Picture 1: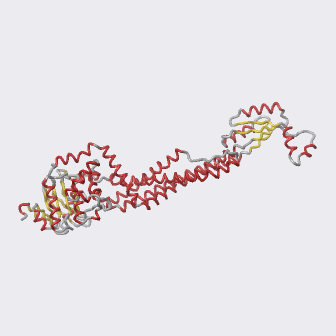
Picture 2: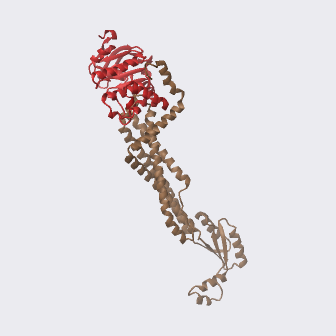
Picture 3: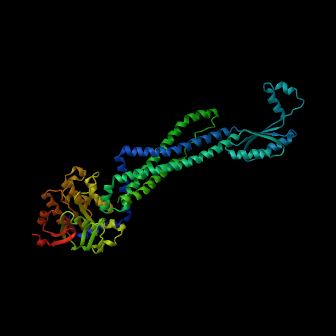
Length: 323
Length: 225
């Protein structure tokens, strides 16, 4: 570099060295910008942590709702396992018809088991009930019909269970169908509303993340107007000036995403014990519905993208004004 | 190398900072631009760095008409210039090394080469031992030398300086000008705006004198005394 030892053509040849290595130069620019933006975040730890915490909470809320809905859904499924559909046949149906119908129903999609109860079995059960015994003795004939107790499969959806009930009602020889699972259809409808709400919340909080990052970057650019001016004066392109702010957006988003996942996992952990107790009530059929792994990975990535987008939108506008 | 051809600069509000200015600075020449405050010295340098655009006339640099450089071409032009400012324009939250390194980072120079060049530039201005310090811990003269190291580190073909010795004592100012003269000796074109007449006389270089935006004298190095 010394002017006394290096001629200008040599110097210029060295200066153009960078043009022969565009990719590594581009990579180094990015590395430099990423490092510089991280150092800036670290240089104001309280402000950075507060921003990340606010964004993390905003992202954690839809995750918490999602977790809650998943567990309600899981509870619904567990309770659905106790669902039994009673099919009362017409009183003129004989045993052969009842057995044939039971066989036919057993082959239906979504049916786990069918139990046939004869009128005599029904009479025996009724006679064991307090207060019924004397009344039943007064009857000349057994008025009870054959009853088919249909147990749907554990994983049957509320819609499929509803269709099964409709099919049973339409069968020949069936007088009445009693379904204990109507509540599941109502619950599923409510869950659908809840899922839509989660999506709307996620979109709203994503917008909030965008705005928080955008405002943080705007303030950062404003406070660094002098530095930006110097960089422009010594030949920095707009992309070079903007890059550290874009990386700052990415870091904010990424760290906030990690905070959100940590909070959601904390909520999930907090649910384990009470759900285990509830599960005992339902003979161990209930399990905590956790967040899927793909979602745990996707949240920081999406948050980093949102951070980048917020920084991109604001820096493009702000730098045009500032420089 | 540098040519001002009938250049007029009129700011919004009608103030005419330069008027019909025509002069040339040859490749590898060192020249001072002097005049009272408001004579147009800073505006002249701003036109060279495309911080401002002329209202009329042409500014040519290395055969290139600067009027034809669009917004996207300005960073490239500025990377070919070394600029020294009276107020140093250093980044106070970064070390001396990081400040001097900036033009090389912008120019995409590899890290190893950057380190070598930064240390060479700091050695040239006598601040090699200060590379880890923050500018605020240095004296005004040392800060100015950091600014000069930053201006020369990318080996510009043209070095322009706006009142680079404005805050320095005469001896330090002379030493700084000596540095500029050394760069001129290896082929760098140097243009310095200053109103420090005693310093100009000591340096014995060409002097362009402005008054109210007009060229009133163009004195060769030989004529300075």
